[in-house]
Image 1 (spheres, helix red, strand yellow):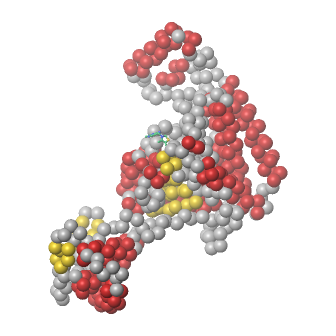
Image 2 (cartoon, rainbow, N blue to C red):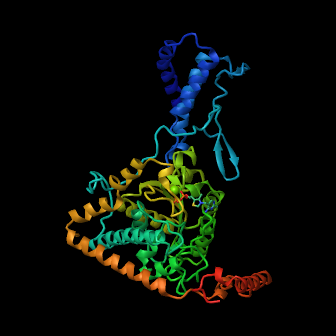
Length: 495
Ligand SMILES: Cc1ncc(C[n+]2csc(CCOP(=O)(O)OP(=O)(O)O)c2C)c(N)n1
Ligand SMILES: [Mg+2]
């Protein structure tokens, strides 16, 4: 401590002439001290995700001691902005602050400081974004990443292409009036597929809704996707949900629910059950940037943190929550910084770089399972498509912004360049793949469309073991209404 103080006295001495030549000598003392104080807040090293600097007494002591020295030499009594007099306790040999003095507080020891110091609302620098591939598909010099073998890389690329074509064809099917609704993952194919590739099939997925690529990777067939979108009798939800609300027990993929973020507190519970069963698996819970404005996001993260639940939270920050831009969603440096507030290790990754996502998720999964605690990943991307078929995004964002992300930052194009450079993929394979996927999808749609719809009774089944009386009444009332207005009800739903 004495070393720090004597060092800081020297620093204060060096600073003195600079302050004396302050370019606005007539500045009021209150403002002057405010300026010094403001500087001091900003010069503290807040905001590293490891939290080391925040806990390190040396960082604080260095700054605090410098300020104490400044205070001693420059201010005994001064006014605040509000005009009150503030007393600065003079320094003497018996009133040193000792770094061993601390508050034994429930939850951990907190050291004392005589400095009234507010934590800055923002770090000096924004959290950087981890990437591996340049826009031209070259691994960036100095980047460290786990090499992906040919088989995995080609499967990843093929799956991204499949997802892209599936989106185009289902989107068109909705436009033709064959299905009622659709929502694409366009622009976010790398987050979908690279995450799936980095997990094992035992990891339990709690999706938001823009992550069908995980199911695709795990073997959910194009026919199964089509059956759900058409709500036919082969749909596992038996037509109860809108299109794109997929779910699969077989593939450890919880059924999507429309209210956003509800899956996040649930994820903490599911993960805790994996922990109790000592499973070598984790829960992977997705949210969008918009989902983080829900209370459930905060409850979910806090719950997982205090329970040491093995959840990998992935936020797809795609810039938009329908028409709300992220600038109206939060004042923080995105989502990644929120992890530390809950005591959760966090990282920001380029969501359009499949190799970076793959590596991040592999590393994060390892930590989650072996350290048995949550991790938060913020993947930066862009929602290139409209929010859904109920939206027209050109009404609220510039077309050239969409175009930029669609072309210059396209995740498929970047990954393809890398796979191509490795000699693992040719143009002929590309056109053959596209033709074949298209054909399979058109066929799946035809089959799904022709398949009979679930019988009316299925609308009331599967939620309760024994149907409660209010649902009995609703079923009875529905049947009577159909009898009275038969012409208004779809003929293809067996009553
Ligand atoms: C609790 C709740 N509030 C509002 C909505 C309406 N809603 C549906 S999607 C959405 C935007 C979500 O944005 P984001 O989480 O960023 O996901 P993205 O669509 O960008 O993938 C909203 C507000 C909802 N479904 N549930
Ligand atoms: Mg969003």
